[in-house]
Structure formats: C-alpha cells, structure tokens
Figure 1 (spheres, rainbow, N blue to C red):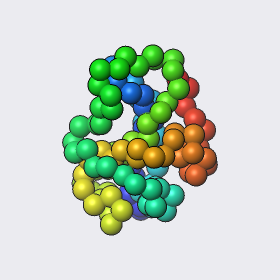
Figure 2: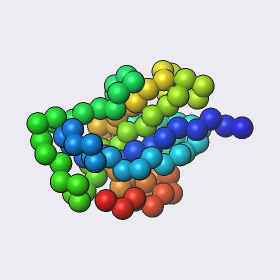
Figure 3: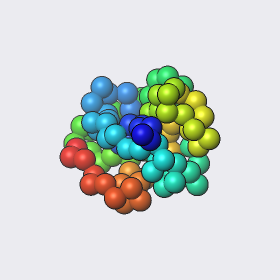
Figure 4: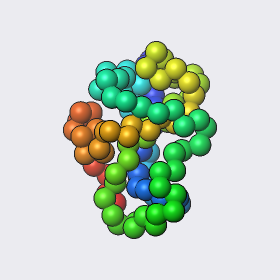
Amino acid sequence: MTGMATLYFGRNGNDPNRASAGIDVSIQALSEALGRFDKRFTGEEPPVVNPGEKAHEYGPYTLTVVHVESKDTNPTFPKSGYYWFPELPPESCAELLGLEMPDR
C-alpha cells in the first residue's frame, strides 16, 4: 500500500479558519505532480504566511500546503511535517492532481 499525505489549501493570516479540510492524496501522486515545484519545509506546525493579515473566511484560497507523517516520507518529502509550495496556486495544484477545489 502506498503512503498517504494530506493536502490543504489555505489563506494568508493566522485565523483558525484559514485552511480547507484536508484531502488525503497518495504520497506517490503528490511527488510526481508537485516534485518539480519549489517547496519550503515549515516543521511540525502549518505555515503562517503574512500573520498580520486578516483572512476573509470566504476569500479565495491562495496557499498550497502538504502534511506528511513520518511513516510516509520519501525522497521528495524527506521529513515529517508541513511543506508549503509558495509558487503553486491551489487551482493549479488541484488541476495537476485531478481534484475539485474545495468549498471556501
């Protein structure tokens, strides 16, 4: 069985409602689709981008984030924790993976 990771789409700021519900995606599919994009490992806490900005809970998602557990690491995602893709818009990510964008 292939490992799984959780994909989130989020907004700037540190509001508790800034992220979509997680979408489970195989780590292999994520590695193949997203491996060529720049990513930043943010550790065991999800990234907070522009923390002073108030995110509107119905505004568009602007961040793509993947969470990987230690049992599912691989060469593309070598550490357990959160990875932020600063140059990958959520709509593009969803299209690459054949996913529907979640409701806001």
